[in-house]
Image (cartoon, rainbow, N blue to C red; front, side):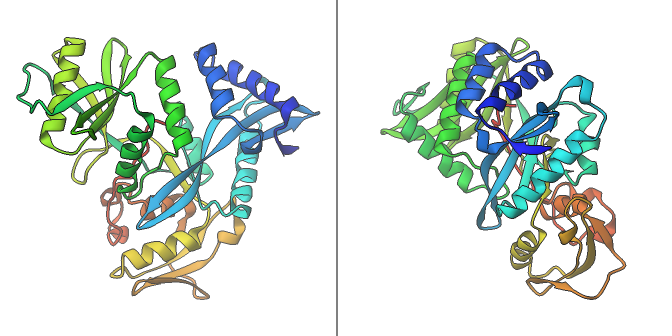
Length: 356
């Protein structure tokens, strides 16, 4: 039986988490179940009234060619060891897709915690989608920066969130963060003994980054700045604070850069995505037949032509599954695919700070 969680099942869900993710600290688990977990976003598989598998569907907006669409991020997907390899998680995710379809959530995303899980998620329609890039910064000097620029740990949460949200909102194909999400990230960084640093000039935020330590390295995530002086001010702070010669920066990947894959996506509502995509790419002409094993109502023939996409009664010789369609419409490394799909440009979808 598949059901949403209630207060009784919450304890069982927490128990599954503790068994499945033994490296997570009690502090992190307490934080997650107080800040991110909700009964109404938790789907549970019951066997004889006992919770044996579960996950949360966390709500995030996603920018897609001028539109801001709801999406569901799958978090904490786990099955008790004695119930694994029975197809339970496949059934649970398939039920989740139908729930998303019913609730007008057109996209689902996740970050596999193990490499082998990528193949599992591909079988149920997910495709690699999100990329980032890393940059090694050698901090062997300080930079000349105007005295107007001051870099310091975050103090004003409201102003900092407004700056961060404004940056993310300008990025196409990007998972957005609500104020609640941002507050949770700040709490997470407190638990992990990291910090969030901002640079200000004339009382305006000009830059921002998230810093933590991992395997004796300083990792800087979402290194954002408005101008060169803000960038250099952040560099100076990192150099003086940590006395290191090299720091690894993780940031949004730009076209022509070699992106590192982290994160998968699955389209739930192809009609909506195809309509928006066609309008944004009026020069694409493409006729295909779509196959979706988990959501049969998505099995249709489509024609993208002159800025529009319509279901058609005419079958195509080009048959693709929802997995491939998700990759094509999000532009994931399409330049590496067959020339058949060369009309679909490559993009760099971005998802970060997901508490993974």
